[in-house]
Length: 417
Length: 196
Image: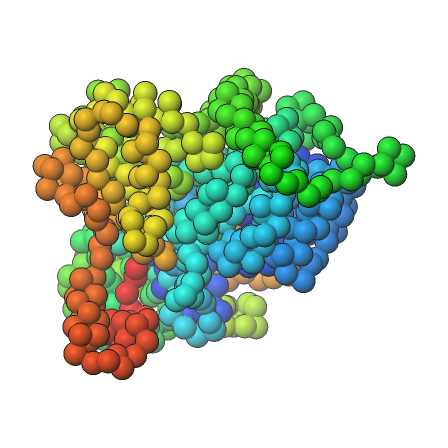
């Protein structure tokens, strides 16, 4: 049924349709509306049987999720930003133990400086945690991906993060097609655990493993993610057949067929990029967009196949590895090993800096003229950066950077973005 | 694509107004997107929310920089924020005020933009009469329906009913209807004045 609905609410309703038996979470913006929505559905008896557990921290949230999943329950949680960092040790344990928990990450920057706005620093920090990471481009896709994530995770016995842009998606009202309970039940079978804590058939889960088998356990996690590369497109196909729309899969490709320049990106910025590409195509520029929907596992072969016909690849990312540059770019370059392509990394939108179509078109035009530096920070305010560098050169006690820059900017409330 | 920007203060229901507008447009079969400016909102602080209507899927996620429609929920913002930033030459402007645009010092705005698309509505007074509280958002949406015809009063009333229930919904719907009527009459008078 079509609804005009907030992204968080749409995800809450979709998760409820997946019949989770345990939901535990600790509130943090911009994830809070999702678990509030689920809390209401549990309290109203709409989602039953399900235990909603309020916990005292994100570390506890993931720990409860691990216990619930090990006891055989379909388990869900959600977090963002410092919340994800705070649960980090347990995040690794969930994947190391092979427990198919589904977690929404409502992507938000990491402090300091503290910042509640969107970028991808949080989920990127858990890139190597062993969780699958799927990135939604719209609210429709976010809700569809959660339904697919339970199926995928449970088949492989691996946890899945569904990453959706905080505020930009979580707080946006837009049209979403909400499936029925019967449709979701037909798509997603009841959870059949590979391992379960059962008093009737006792096992222990979480053994200490020494050098004799640790590498093999790690390798098996990689083997499962490699299997996911096959299952993700199959599950997306099955979803399309049942629900009549395409969501998920490894990649989204837009006007890439004859493109000389292809922009690669993750998440909701793909939509703005598609609009930018349409405008540039109207002006005769051969440009396309490749969205990465499965970031872990990273589809090296599919990315290579999608990009190898282009002359130029621009990776636009809301994440940044300080001291190196792009994060997604590194993976894309691995996919392109041996191909002679011009490659550019554009870091954009950190801490909620608006990514405008005009800036994208300007940046892409520079890339197409091969006038873009290899690493670009889109719409960076060089004035305040240089002023701070000069201040540090002139004075030993130059003071806190964030406060200095805010003073230079004048912290205006009157700006729209 | 039609782009709307709503300026107000924390606690005035700015974000809810944008959400209700999107529900009204959806009710009329259109694609719509509403989102807040994502600040750490505090009561009284300047707040911005955005809404877009289109006849196809809306993929653009940037803030509304060049609005076709501007709704100002608190006229005291006019001295603090450049609310008219980027407004399209043929844009609509609706200001919550019991006084006309000329009376609140916006004569230059009246001259720069299309006179028949700029108006005011005493939304706070209307809200106070119906709700007993100075929450002008629903009334402004009724006024916007009359000013632009881009959504119907019926769709606005439906949207209010989606977001609120019971007495609160009913009093907001009544406020929207009164504001609709106020703006309709203002526009008729202004059209007659221009014809004379």
